[in-house]
Amino acid sequence: MAEPRVEPDDALLDRFQRAAFGYFVDQFEAGTGLVADTSRPNAPASIAVVGFALSCYPVGVQRGWIARADAAARVLTTLRFFWNSRQDERPDATGYKGFYYHFLDMKTGQRVWQSEVSLIDTALLMAGVLTASTYFDANNASEQEIRELADALYCRIDWRWACGGEKTTRQGWKPEGGFLHYGWDGYDEAIILYVLALASPTHPLSPDSFTKWTGTYQWENIYDYEFLYAGPLFIHQFSHAWIDFAGIQDDFMREKGSDYFLNTMCATHVQREYARRNPFGFAGYGRDCWGISASDGPGFRTLKIDGRERRFLGYAARGVPYGPDDGTINPCGTVASLPFAPELTLSALRHFCACYPDMTVNSKLPSGFNPTLPGGGPAGWVSDGYFGLDQGIAVLMIENYRSRMIWNLLRQCPYIGGGLRRAGFTGGWLA
Image (cartoon, one colour):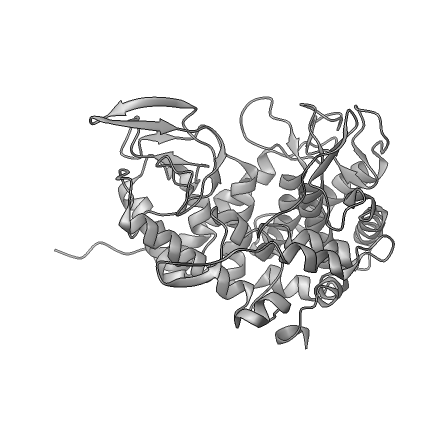
């Protein structure tokens, strides 16, 4: 009997990457260019998801999934909306001081859910804006307008205001009460924020703001891996979607003899080792079933399963090894680990396909699944609908693994290189 045909790695990745890219085609609002936070009915736009969309359109063009003219038109609609939307202190505006509210109405662009003017989400939006402006370099009217609007949007941001009188940036601002009473503390996804803020030609942060932030870092030894700790997987991935950190170092990493790429590689191995050890006995966890991150969850409830009390969470930033952990895996976070641990990640993706067909239907990966909580199939509970952040990080990191496209593109963006140098990064491609 003939052995069953094994799908080649590239075909496997192409299938899942294309399905994830489809999210940004399907969830696009033609009037504003905004993209929904989730595929669930009546979901608002997330400005971070828009940033991922703007970064994914070039991938779609290169892969032949969308025409260049169509992608450029989508980008232009989005940039025109943000440039012309209302920027003031009123609570129903779209943004303030060049920043934007975290969640916006898809059709009007007005703030929803009393969300905050979000610094990190604006930074992710701008990463997409600059990706699009670097990619769309043709000498025609639409692509030239993309570049002009992108530069204007980036230069309008008042990063100094965003510090609220402190040395480091605040996490957000609301018209009802001013700045949120906390900033960035400990390693997180904010490197992209600081790189963009330091490079600003109009309102830059000073380099000591970055140094003050890295002074809150927590270096740990977990399972014999020494690395800069953060529990959720997305923290180790998001800035890497745009910036190639391999071989470049800031002062902190020079002292440790590492870099942020190697650090994320260590964090990925820690994730897998945690799942292999499975200290809380969750169903499914193992060498090929790992990936604990910010994700959707079964909802806040406590159930007794197989004689053991289990507390489940809703949407939460899950992390290892210190938690929280309720048995929920984010498979998009697993797939986004490709550049850092390709063999481990490909093995996990094949495991998902073989063991959880109810979770990988149509080659789309949900925000979370939890085999510990019984559901309609072997994957147990599976998140309803799809989340834009998950689909975006999957598209970009698969592409960086396959072709290094986004990394190579952003090396050409002067703001990225300038911000890294102001933060003290040296070596590698910066040399």
